[in-house]
Image 1 (spheres, rainbow, N blue to C red):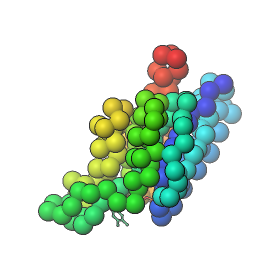
Image 2: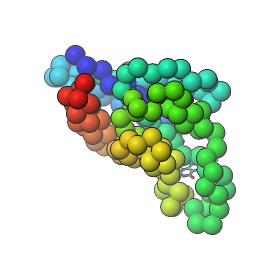
Image 3: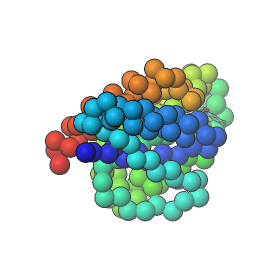
Image 4: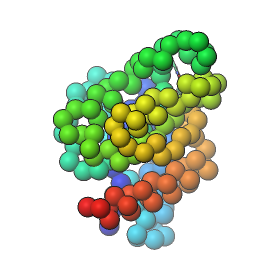
Length: 157
Ligand SMILES: Cc1cc2nc3c(=O)[nH]c(=O)nc-3n(C[C@H](O)[C@H](O)[C@H](O)COP(=O)(O)O)c2cc1C
C-alpha cells in the first residue's frame, strides 16, 4: 500500500482546508480500491526551520506576492518563503516530485506564480492549480493527477 506525501504551507487556512478534503477523498478512494494511494500531510509553519526529507513528496503552495494588481506591481514572494527554504535545504529538492499552486484569479498574471516559480527552480513539474479553498471537482481532479504522477515515481524507485 502506498501513501503520497504532501508538504505545504497555509497562512489563512485555504490550503489546509483543501488538503484535508483531498486526504478524506483519498481515504474514500482507498476503501473502494486499496491500490488508490492514501495521503500523508506535513504543514510547514512560516517560522519553521527545515528538516531533512528522505522520501518523495508533492509541494502545495498558495501565492502571496507584494503589491498585487497583477499588472504593474511587485513579484516578490512574501510569507510563504519558509516552504521554499524548506525545499531548498540540503537534498530536499531532489525529493520534490511536483508542485500544485493555489491563488486567486483576481491577481491576473500573478495567479499561482509562486508555485510556477518553485516548479522551475526545483525542477519539478507544475502539476495543477486551484482557486482559494478549491471545489469538489478540484479535489477529485487533483487526486487523479497526483495518483498518476505517484505511480510513475514508484515505478522509478
Ligand atoms: C496579501 C495577499 C497577497 C496575495 N497575492 C496573490 C497573488 O499574487 N496571486 C494569487 O494568485 N493569489 C494571491 N493571493 C491569494 C491567496 O493565494 C489565496 O487566498 C490562497 O488561497 C491563500 O491560501 P492559504 O489560506 O492557505 O494561506 C494573495 C492573498 C493575500 C492575502
